[in-house]
Length: 247
Length: 247
DNA sequence: TGGCTGCTTTGACCGAGATCAAGTGGGAAC
DNA sequence: GTTCCCACTTGATCTCGGTCAAAGCAGCCA
Image (tube, rainbow over all chains, first blue to last red; front, side, top):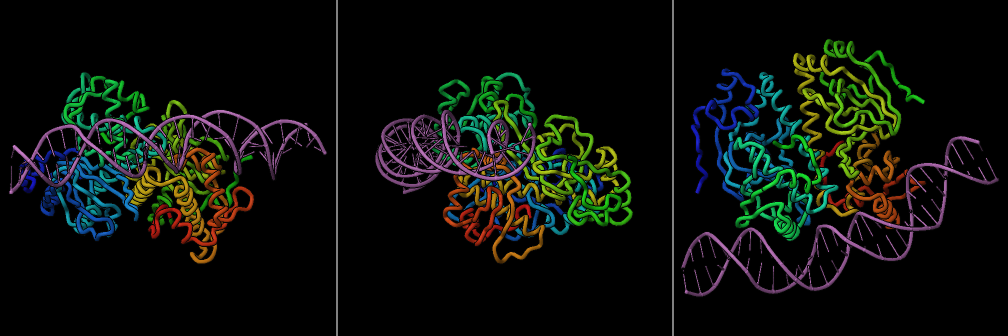
């Protein structure tokens, strides 16, 4: 039942997120120091990793799988405020309580550090602090990009935006080129997509059906998507030459 | 016509944002180093400070006034993605092109640094890098908070949310207590509010009228607002015990 | 095999907010 | 003063996406 690790625990060098995570800039010595305080944790799909308001005694990186940051209002309305992909950082140095729910959307493996030792390490290791700043600035950009999606785009454009992000991220992970059709599996349920997009799950379903009917995407089953023409999808998303974004 | 500075240029110690800006943690020596590379710039209300896509050769802090970060789609739809208040930082170390339009909403004075020297300074001054990380994390929180507003709140709740932010910010600046009525001037036009909230200006106007009619706020002229009961306003905003946020 | 259960689709209807269109009011220029 | 302008308000109508309701469909367990 527990998600199994697919790589060698003992060795940071072989870690799949070695070059992108908060430790990306670390040299051999620094890596060794981190190595000595790290530990792995696995979470099953659907499990809540951290509850909003809880005391957080660890920080860490997503090694594999996808997690989400979610806010909830008292009456139950929820909004996803971040998607955490492999190499993304969880937790906030210098703060005790978690600000959001963190949930495992798929099975997730995290590389964790107890907060105190990590904070101390950060203070004496500019490589870590600097990398974390860079990653935080990237996340801020992604969040602001997403504000445009939430505030101004139509339902159809929202769906197209989400699909293009997932397609792009998938291509960057699997190192496929940017030409030819994009093929990937949706890692989110219709409801999770709705929470991310500020829509209802019915609207998500309808708009996906519409994009399929119009030939913008092909669907095999409910999750397997083919994008025959990426430019067409980007056009549907409303941003015709959108740079960057989550990667 | 040019906005005039209200304080002593020569001296960082007397700077109104000394204790909150990116230089907050600096000691006397560091401050002196910054002092030697800083310069002030003034902008009039309505002026564009930076165009999205432009090469940015400076970074800096807002000293007084309010600026906004805005994204625009090709068809003209716009979304404000950030409000920059005194002490907020503008620009991104390590990136050349600006990602957003930055506009002066009121008359603005900025304390600027040429990007290169600032980056070099940052690399050798952990106090600056650390403070910038902290400020960026705060901004990220504010952005995510705002995603909930954009994605899930009704027009009325959005207006109430914006008013409560402005009221709170104003109280924190002017050091008024948190009891008794809040009184402040709206620093934004109806259109700017609409851009921030993902609404049209007509809807903004209607909802403000409705809140006024229901006694949640009092209006004198079009911009002068009194909030007789802050808890009532927060209730209307949908967050009944909302912590933090922009400050 | 049948019946759950969870995810998804589809339909009918409704309403919040957008759109289109006047109209108001106050300040600045003439 | 009067005129212009600009920010704002208000009204009438339309529409996109929400809401409520009913199936469809695949996987799973008994």
